[in-house]
Length: 515
Image 1 (cartoon, rainbow, N blue to C red):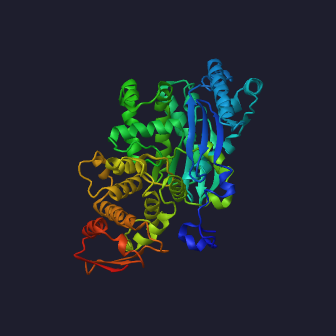
Image 2 (cartoon, helix red, strand yellow):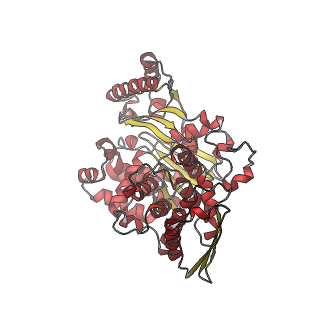
Image 3 (cartoon, rainbow, N blue to C red):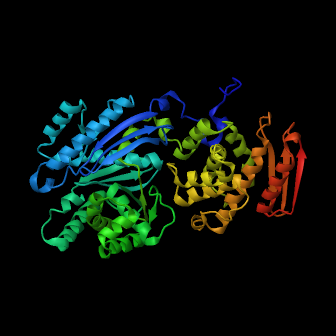
C-alpha cells in the first residue's frame, strides 16, 4: 500500500521492484552479530540497516595469530590462544550489551586442523558460554563466495580467500557457487617450508598447478578475499599513487599485480608498512601472500582482479537471506534505506528519478541504477552546513559502504551529487578523483546533478508527477512541461537552475509549458 492506502504493484516501482528493507524478512536481519575466529585474526562484525547492503554497526579485529607454528607443532599458538580468548570474551560481552547475544561464531583452518582445537573450543564454551562452530574447508570456500555475491549479484569468476593457514577457491557462475576447494597455501604455513625462497616459490608453483587442474579454466574475474590480499591491494594503490582509498571493488590488471609483487620484494618492508598504514603482523604475511597471488595470476590468467571486502562473515549473512532479497541490487536497496532514514521527503527520490530519466535516452547513457541511486541520495545530506553539502555528498558517495559500485561509478555518483548542491567543480579538494572519469562521464554526471538541482525545486508539488523533461539534442532544445498547479513553484531560483541545466546540456533554447 502507498501513503494514500492504494495498492501498489511491483511493476509500479519500475525495474528495481518494491523496496524490501522494511519487509519482515529483511528486518529480521537488521542487527546480526558474527564472530570469525581465523588462523590470523579474530573479528566481530555486527551488521545493521538495509540487510541487502548492510552497514557495519560494529567491526573490530584482533590479530591473535592462532595458527602461527601450527604446521610445525600441530597445535595452536599458546600466546595466540590467550589473545584469541581475551578477544572472544570482550566480543561476547559487547554482544550482550548490544542485546544481540549469542553471536553466530565460526572457527576456520587453525582450530579445524589443530590437535588441541577441540580443547580450545571447550575452553571458549566454559569461559564465555559461546559455541564455536568449526567449518570445513569447502564450506569456508562456499561462504566466502557467498560474501562476494552479497556485493556482486550475478557475479562470475573465481573467488580466492586467503587466511593465515589456508586458502580457499570457489567458482562463481550466474550468481551461484560451483566447484570449491581448500588448500594449505596460507602464508603462516608457507613460513615453515625449508629451503628458502626458492623452495617456497617451487612449492607454490606446484600447488597452484594442481589447483588449476582441479578447478579447470578460470579466465574470468579473480575475486580476492582476505586481509593479506587487501594489504597487497593497498600497496598496489601506493605504488600507483591511486587517488581513492577504498579497497572494496578495487581493480587490478595482471600486469599491475606482477609489478606490485616486484615492488614488495624490493621496497623496505618497514617503510612500506608505515606508508600504507598496515599492521606489523599483517605486513609479515604480505611477501609470501604476494608470491601466491603472482602464481595464481600467472597460471589462471584472469581477465582482471578485484578486491572484495566481503567474505565469510558477509557470506553468513547472505546465507540467512530469502531468495527475493538475494536477487536485489545492493546499491539500490542501500540508497532506499538511506532515503527513508535521512531524507526530508522520503519517497521523493522515485519522482525525481522519473523526472530526470528522459535526459538519458542515448545508447551511451549512464546505467539507470546509477541515476536511480543519485536521485535516492540527493537529499540525505541536508543536515550538513549549506556551504559544505556538496563536499559531504561527494565524500559519502565515494567512501560510504555501498555494495555493487565500481570505483569510477562511485566518483560518477559523487560528481552528480556534488552538482546537486553546487553549480561548478572549481576550488574543491576532489580534483584528483575527477580524473578517474572521462570527459563524457563527467558531463553526464554534471547534467544529472543539475537536473536533480532543478527538480528539487518542485518537491512541493501535490501532483503524482513533477512534469516532463524533453531534450532534443539535434535541435539543441530543452522543453519543460510542468505538472498542473506547479507554476508557483517555478520562481527565480528555479529559473536560474534550469538555465544552468540547459547550459550543461549545451542547448540553445528551452521552453517551459504548463503549470
